[in-house]
Length: 115
Image (cartoon, rainbow, N blue to C red):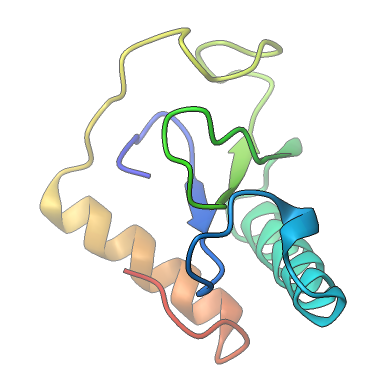
């Protein structure tokens, strides 16, 4: 997510026309849960986060996607949820590339695509 206020990734299962976790096959649900846990653990370790927030809201974008957000006790809206609290702070291109590279390195080859 292009918001430098928080390290924030979005997982999108590569399954067409899926809007809910329970629409996935049991096998795909398990994989999504494992990938969500792996990403959360990686973000917490990489950024020394106080808490990892995980959510699948999907009211604006119907395709199933999972938000995994590193939170800090000193972040701009702690302890409230991040949605609708403040305007996103865009990454610079260099900072965005560095954040992506750091997350990719933390994950190794355990997740298939980050962009």
